[in-house]
Each structure stands twice: as structure tokens, then as C-alpha cells.
Length: 150
Image (cartoon, rainbow, N blue to C red; front, side):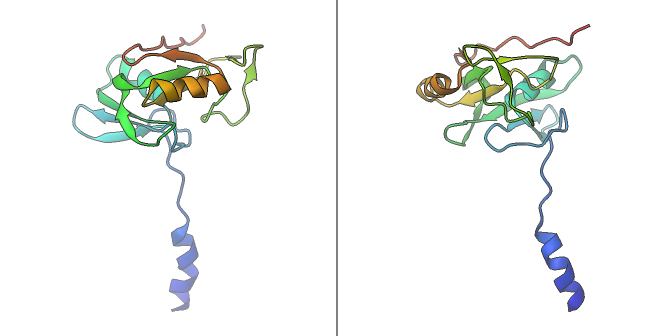
């Protein structure tokens, strides 16, 4: 009996889930789910990581579902309103350096930067942008991916 009690609290501690693409911790408000061509579903820390994976040659990504930052529900990537480059950077462990318009400056290459946050409605995306800066992308309008500096 003492053995079960000793293991009880340890069994309740959950390990943080990590991104299948970059191995960073996943944050519920921006998680993306990639459905691979074989039907397996894997999680990415953010829409940016999922987009990187889908566009890299040789990867077997099918569809991507993203989390509505305002409402928490899942929606298809291609129907999401996307705010790119706001001062909200869930994947980073330090606050971004921002310019006078509150857009983060990218000091070096980072797969998750600039941040890409999904919304189910244009109104919610615009309200977020008014408070946190960034650039709005309408549904179906994919942002360009940053390249690795050489």
C-alpha cells in the first residue's frame, strides 16, 4: 500500500507535450495539428512550424488544423485569419525586441519567428492586432517563410 501512495503524486504529473517539428513545448492557444498522408496526426507548437513542415521538400504532410487563439477551437489552416509578427510570441522564452510599431525584430533565424497566430474571424484578428501589432493575412493568403541565413 505504501508503494502505491509513493507513486500516486508522481503519476499525476504530466510532462509537457513537445512539437513534432522543432521539439519546443506546445502551448494550447497556438497548437497546430498536422495530418500526415498515412493518417497519423502529430502536433506542432505553432502554425509557423506546421507551415514550415508542410512546405519542406519530401515531407508527407496532408492537412493542417490550427487553434483559434480567441476561441480555442480547431479550424482548417486555409480558412484561418493569421496575424504574423505580433508582440505575442508563445514559442519564445524571452520577450521579443520590438520596433516603434511594436513589431518584433528578428535578431537571428528561428523557425517559429515571426510569430504566426490563427483566428477564426477577421474581427478577432483585427482586435488582437490593434493591441499587439503584426500583419493580417486573410484566409488562404499564406505568409512567406523566412529562410535560413547563410
